[in-house]
Length: 256
Image (cartoon, rainbow, N blue to C red; front, side):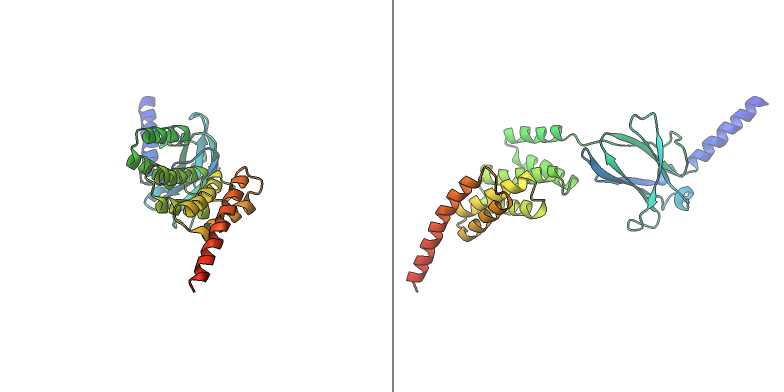
């Protein structure tokens, strides 16, 4: 009789677990490919999971080693949907997690978020560049940008695309557009923004004949980075540009 009772209890527990609709819960996170020390928002959309749909509280069970789990409350995100819960976490290493309405971890439906290995990512880019596989390289760089919007890695990837169009394709106007986007899209303390400003001004002055624009950007660079090592080069460029601009104005006045 005892054996039959234990079997009944086991079957009841299994039935209870599977009726909880783990497979119908839509779990996702943003960014999808996080970098180290980046904030990740983990979502659980339970609109199709009847067992969890009207839960008073959803919890996330987090683990760094896949063995020891700690439980934290999730919060509704009505901007994402009526039945969407979220939890924000600063990712400094790979994590494992489970989401449900239980107060403890039960080893069912475990998810993992892994950090992007940027060294391997850009190592692949370097190999593609060495092999002159530019189309594939640009595709990989765009994937990095879309997966890391607004981050230093995205800025680095955009800058590498600009450099390809400048140095490998010699498409100066296209390269200039990329540099302009970098300058307007990222904080001024990013190294790629500083380099983009200098390169854009140089392209304007030496390839596109946009002398006035080049002068404006060079002066903006001096205001933003007054102690930079490039200031002496910029002053030399500005001297030449001032002469050219004066000559152009003289020619325009003489033709009137």
